[in-house]
Length: 216
Image 1 (cartoon, rainbow, N blue to C red):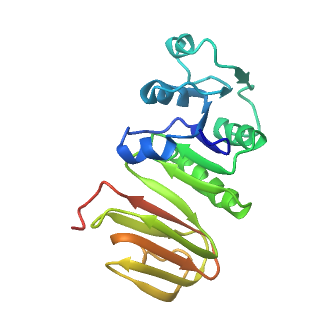
Image 2 (spheres, rainbow, N blue to C red):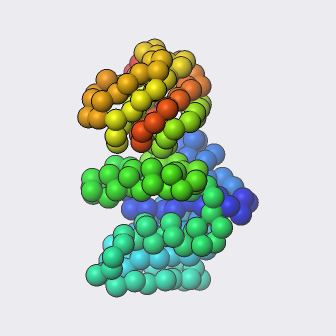
């Protein structure tokens, strides 16, 4: 188990794919409110359970009687997920996997998770957001690589103007590209395998669909 890798179990959708199991395999776990239901599916026991518990059914509480609970009032100034991330950081987290962060019924929460991930990356944390079927990682100034199946789809979502954007080993490569804020130019690209992204300035998210091989 990696002492500095934490998976935060959030309330969104989560599919138990091979990539998900590999990603969380050696991590520690903290559950945020109803995200605890994913602990049952994963067959793990989190070390902490936080939230206002307004979305936690009684039978779920009974399934984890020994997990320490840290309750907060419903009228709080942060989401359950943000509280869980803060608790992970207090316990030494350097890599954060936000499981159940994408999709689901609350698009406001999903968007907030993406924004929070970029903010955390700016603070030096390694962040992955996943639903099992979709994965997202922040892209800031610098270079990252994503190991994606050939033919799988990915997009770069600019949260600001992007300068010096390069994408290598993709069907539609870019070199030192300027992406205006709000442009859809970088939506729906296709991986040729491991994709390399580099950026001179700006804030973005790379959103990948590793099991969607419609680009083959």
